[in-house]
Image (cartoon, rainbow over all chains, first blue to last red; front, side, top):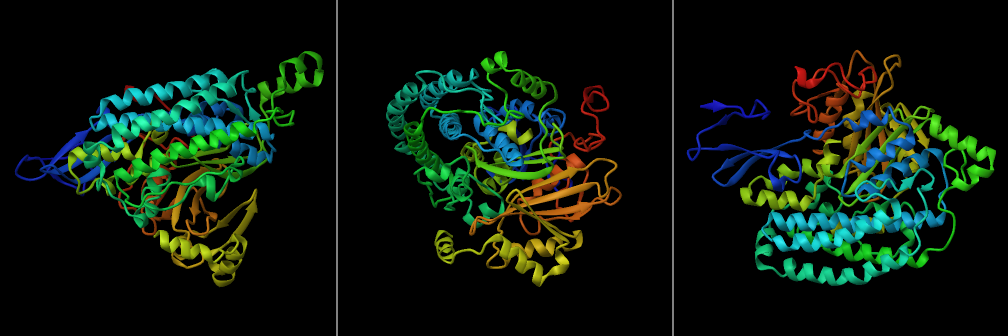
Length: 406
Length: 172
């Protein structure tokens, strides 16, 4: 019996006779270890993966189209919903691209808070990756410890912005509002307790023989192949390429912070794991430095036509009221031009291409989603591996379907 | 690879403006225009020279644009001529330069040669651009829709495609 399952390309005829020859297995979109709604068409020879064809688009919501119908400031909430594990990173990439078009100067305090919040968010995102990655490989308890730590960060983000999963904290020209009183103390508390948790993770996983056996030498991608496939972020650094947008094209003042870029040379699941674990320590270092630099000051740029005025000013100044009305009702115009701004998200290089034709709505917004590109390299990594290792490799490239499908 | 990178780093990479000027001197037929704006460099490339230029930028020492970061289409609107743009964002892991290549296309001839022969990562980006704009990448190994269903009608990021679509997809 010869069948074609799903949308496997026609040049690829599958003969459905199990045990005699190859068989096709559809993994997902409901499979729990595909981290959302990813579907893989796996062609197996026994337990070995002969071919893997990812099938995406189940979560496609037309966000890039929606951007064109929303004003610039309304687009921020859409970015929250793309990579929902790293919403502040998405906010930052989007607003910085617009700020580049507007050539807007951001106050120093706002830049420092942005860096601090993004690094906290990176830790939170890595916590979800760590918990689910370990869960996929059978280590259940790590999940609870990891989500406990993530919860602390989400509480911090909630205190600052009012939202846990969808903060929309960064605005064009600065922040939504300043940090609440006592916030710095709470961050310091977190910084003091997190290294202990990190030690626990190392005890639970890094020294775990089963975890080592499941990850070492699995899903190898060489440095040349990784670059050719456009892989970025921790997945690229796990192959020994020291590329991080925070260092290569610094933004928001990252060039003034003292931190390392962890690199491992194995190119396997284990190396990608170790890179992320070491990245957590670097993020802690950055947050600590940012806290030390925080000085009172404005958190919004001095651009009354772009940045919403303070509540109090609106009650006393007519022009503030007019500007508020105009920004809300009509939006602000952005000079014509096009810009590509990349930041280092928790998954890799997150780029926003924004083209403006001079109006209050963008002519085109394109998101270069790191998960999208990293996932396209998945077939290269899993071909020739055992089927049980596919979940390990998916976990190690840390995908979020929200930003893949957009 | 790490060793190679270190040795390449020792020779300070040339500024991007010099590289582009040298490229323009050597192969003027590959470049129809160079735009500098907001700290970014855009080269507008005639479609027939795109692959030659990409291969040259990737393999020539000194340029080393070995990573294709992104491909995205742009629709300038049904009245504009040329109507479509395809942007290629390149990155060099040696010099950290970023460069944008732009191909302009008329509505009646939306064919571009595929960049998958230079960078394998172009595969999914080109599928997405085809899916959203209907731009055909000649020679692509597997040019199918990637985000939308196989039987979807139209290309939604074109400006003349309505935001809410033509009819509910579920009613088909």
